[in-house]
Image (cartoon, rainbow, N blue to C red; front, side):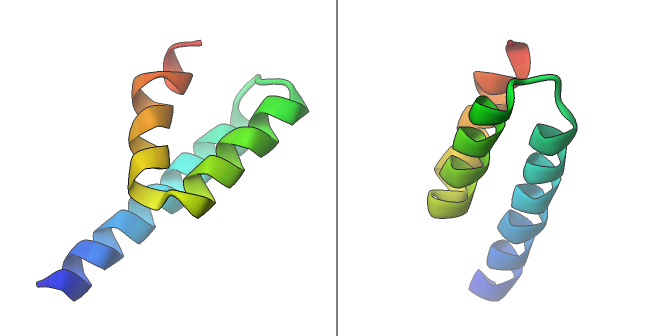
Length: 55
């Protein structure tokens, strides 16, 4: 089951990164969000969709 959960998190992280890259954020903010998602996959993705997506 852990492998399936890891795959789901990976897919959601990729979706979040694509969403960040396509967003209207400044380039510096895009880089920060992508780094946060890459280095803290689950937490970064959740933070982006809860906090970052609103801005």
